[in-house]
Image (cartoon, rainbow over all chains, first blue to last red; front, side):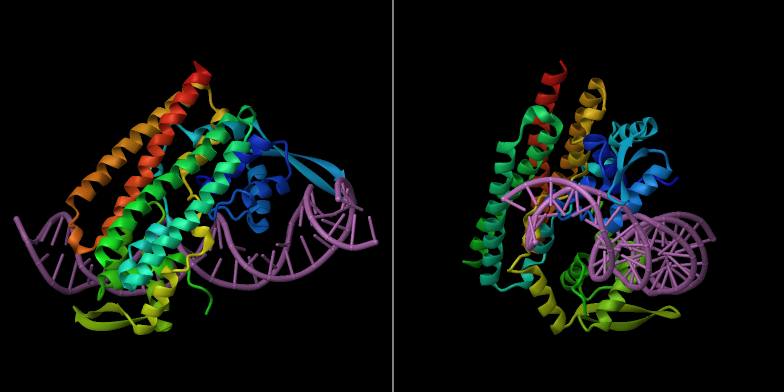
Length: 181
Length: 181
DNA sequence: CCGCTCATGTAACTGGTTACATGATTTA
DNA sequence: TAAATCATGTAACCAGTTACATGAGCGG
């Protein structure tokens, strides 16, 4: 089999973390993650889980549900090996590269705007970021660390990333206003 | 026409920034960006530029090159309008969300590893990050700011992001070693 | 004249999106 | 009893990937 995609491996991880669980639960994990990267569309998740099962990385236990049935997936031993080998170490080199940040991408073309628009772009980015940081810090506060320290640390990682972006936008604001004063 | 994808708008931006330029130059921009997000594959870029031209956002000036020809693209007035409206303000809300960080994703499943493997995962992530930061800081130093202040600021943004990740990994290292001592 | 860079594409494929379709269970 | 949530899928589509194919210009 070809190498697993990031989505496939991540789904495998979610099944391990939440399992035994249904496809529905896996979807919710992505839908509620608040990330633009993970859509969690049914058309992606259902066939993907079927694929993982075919390859013996997860197994389903069917139980009755109304007229139909409901499938609870859990990770097999082969699946655990695959999961561990995906997580690393070793980590693929590309994982150290900067991520895709849509604000940063747009900013490289800021010269295409008028000075007033430039200032407003930066101000709006700062406001949006502030709001998002508030939202996530509230999540951090309400998180029960003992439930899963690694999920907690992962969430804390998003805070650090956004704080980095915040420092950057402060620098950007200074430079932009000094250029356009 | 449907809304442009991020790649389409970014290519439009690159043509504006580097233009008039060939498809080859656009590809190099993505290939040398060092980002895992932008592949810059020919199969993506060539049809995409043809699409942008069909929609009147860029125009090509053909010149002879050997037996064939070479196309230099530049952004049309309609293209400039589209570019400005994509950059914002206003910025779509999702642009404020945390990005997709493959290290963070893997870390949420760190509980699947053995304690020694966990420590090694974090240590390797830190080493890789250090290397990447060194590489990018060298780029920042060699950058001629006056050439394009916004490209420069965009590059500085990647440094801030990686520094955020660095602070986070230090916290992670502390927590992980205290759990697993 | 060799190797590198500049230059342009296409064909087959596929992972993931969008949109649709259905019904059971729980809770206010 | 109405609304929200839990639950499972499929069909059409398409943007982007992989891999292939070709050739000119240029520096040493």
